[in-house]
Length: 100
Length: 307
Image (tube, rainbow over all chains, first blue to last red; front, side, top):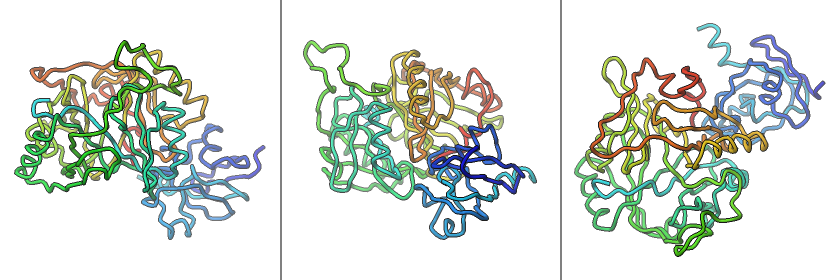
């Protein structure tokens, strides 16, 4: 069991995330696909999520995709999000692709 | 080299964290740090390159490519090509000598795909790293990681490929080695060269201007590509796809990302071309095979994940 639980309320999936592990990495190693995987380096914006509740620390992300006001609003890149409490997230791009 | 453009000379890449980036390009890719400047930029080269640097890393808020530069034969060529670019209708910016350390004056222009390019004639000649010009040994000891041989080419995504073609082919004397053409006859990818290499520069159509797909580095053998793949796993580096073969150029390749999300390629092999060769054409309907010759299907990430 990982240290924190991440619940993706867009898809209803739940997975655990270790201390110091990014949300995207935790999802990938468990074989889940509920957030799109891009560069894994905070650069491309592919794994954009919205953190609805919980707390986390953030690594460096491209300002083009994550300007300060977006980060303030919980709109961050899953590859650069390190939970410090359980998280509830939404994944707007997955919602778009399933309704398209 | 019909009009005197010799080869890719440098690429300046933006990174989110300079220390992480240097570690990636030096310890993993195997480039050699040759200098730093007062702006904090880091200068790197691969071991077979004779000039002082080919990759410049600049820390910034967003990753991507600032510009790619080509070295031309001499100052006369530089002056002539500047006139030709202006006559074509492009704005040409003068970047003074030493703006990049030990590099002569550069002329910079932005093409219709939204990408900035440079031409220059002079850069400090430091010779191949770790081997002599006289009775050189086969390779130097002390190379790191993938031990890449040279900075080879870049691929950019953007619009207006026909106008970009005009600049590189008709003004700068590149030739079209390979292309992807859609059923309406529109070129959606163009692989351009100023040499015998199958590409010194490539573009793929995208509506959004100025996007950077990858910088590529040359390796000698398929075994080296496999070893690069091993190193990517050993270092838990973000893998894109490979090892595999491209249909386009037939190069054997692997793609991965630097810590800021800029895509890197190392590859070996690939076809050659001369100016009298007709372009190789791939049909857009077969784009999967054109890009990934073995899988024959596209991986969405390869087409859409860009910096």
